[in-house]
Image (cartoon, rainbow over all chains, first blue to last red; front, side):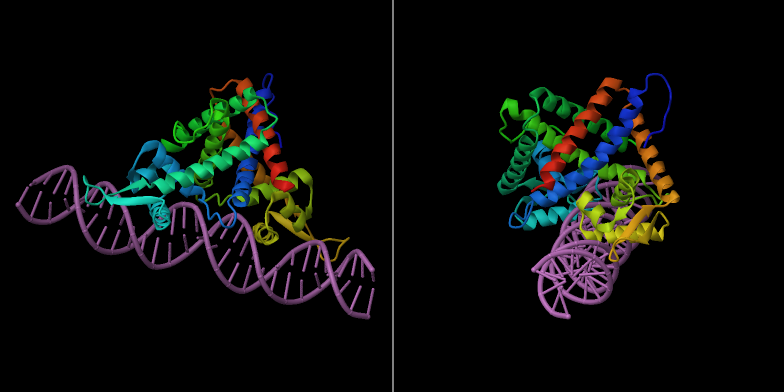
Length: 159
Length: 159
DNA sequence: CGCAAATAGCTGTATCGTACAGGTAAATCT
DNA sequence: AGATTTACCTGTACGATACAGCTATTTGCG
């Protein structure tokens, strides 16, 4: 799994490969973890539902298209997610007063509560898992991940 | 996406919250990126197929159950993935000489080639995206991700 | 103003990845 | 040898997603 580039002191090259590997792995593990974590009775939030609620929480009520654009999802997907969330009482749809076509989605208190619970559970999980990490390492990971996401996002977005 | 809201995490805890946020985000972005990257004609490898090939490459030919256990997937899922990979000529099935029930899966040259191509493309992508990172930062990210995965994995596994 | 084009959202349909339950065959245990 | 376990496959179902097509509304333009 290495393509020797043989330029200079190439430790940076192999980190790209490692990053690729680890991100792929994390995706798998994250999936598995989510599946295992959000088990039976909880009937917790699916992947997208969680991010939708988080985004509504962070960025305020907004319509389906805005959500879709922001989350890099098809409008129809968001429509369905939103329908499910509404069915479960986690968000509310209201006609957009400024645009007769639009619907404004806002989180309900129950939705925020549910989201916070999931968030807390996951955060707890990380606390558990990273119990023996130094605060510095945690902080560094958080920062680097954030930078990675920002880079990935801007790349994905304007292209 | 700012995480300033609604968790009530103590400042010392905040890196955990940030990690949670960023991992969730990375999952979404990774999905989107994969979807965008592996576009049309390539008919590239799906998520699982890629990891299967990588694992076969890294750990050698093995049977379906071993793969399933290792990848945290149901046997049936692996069976189907493997069937698809076989149909596409990327892996080969052979009866296990030591166990009449088993089938040993090995990557074909074409499979390895395909895998390497995807890997290279992704690595290139990361190189592109992280162009302005210092080698140190890249290296640190790779290392921390690896540690995170290891922690997540061992947690997921024996439980 | 009135109609064409764009936009917002929904619904139908398809695909993919995955799981669980059930089947058959082979191996292992007693 | 019979019972149990293991390995794999198949049927079926579900969830997340995309794309295409529909309707209602808004916007832009002659």
